[in-house]
Length: 262
Image 1 (cartoon, rainbow, N blue to C red):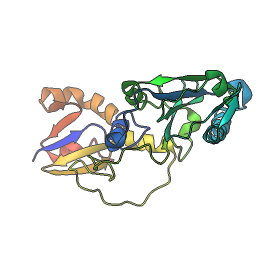
Image 2 (cartoon, rainbow, N blue to C red):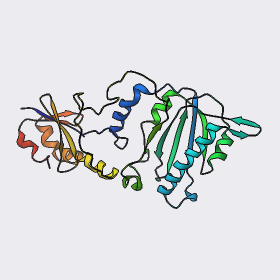
Image 3 (cartoon, one colour):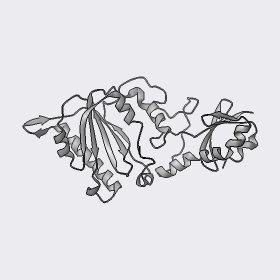
């Protein structure tokens, strides 16, 4: 019997370094071409808040007020500036744990940088045009400075990506667009949700692997993180020519699974 253990059960999640690509796989067929669209960035000044979480929550709420004012038109230096186009918001975290917000409006309208800075008032702002390539790039990261901040890990849920009505293209469903799918492409059974924190979910994913037995796939819980077990067993696996690359290991004897399974 040949059993393949594929490294890392990769969940569909913004908080997993590989799982984030599965998120993008789900939505990429509906993403518009944003080349030339209005691109705004809002950062948070740490001196204005007592904690990173407080800064995030206040900034998120204030951002809604900024959008509301832009939808209704803002007078600035004798002119009225109005932006009521569909938009998306992507949250990212600096290495120091403070959040910033990327916003793409599906419009080519001009918006003065000083006006945006005045409306925001909580830190630095940036106003420019974005290319579609840059847009796809910024979707690949939630934190570029390493792991997620501790305050984020302690949460059960946080919205990393939001869009308004009309932002997504109307198109036929692509792979993983509207369904949570298994590795075979079939709709996975619905499971009862366990309300873990983000940090707890990340630790659970580290101690998970995907087994292939014939054409069937099974997610299993491991006794330790997959990377640690693979490092520990890499020599005998290599000597027996059982390593297939890309974290895949051939198991010829069920007893070989004992050191792996919890």
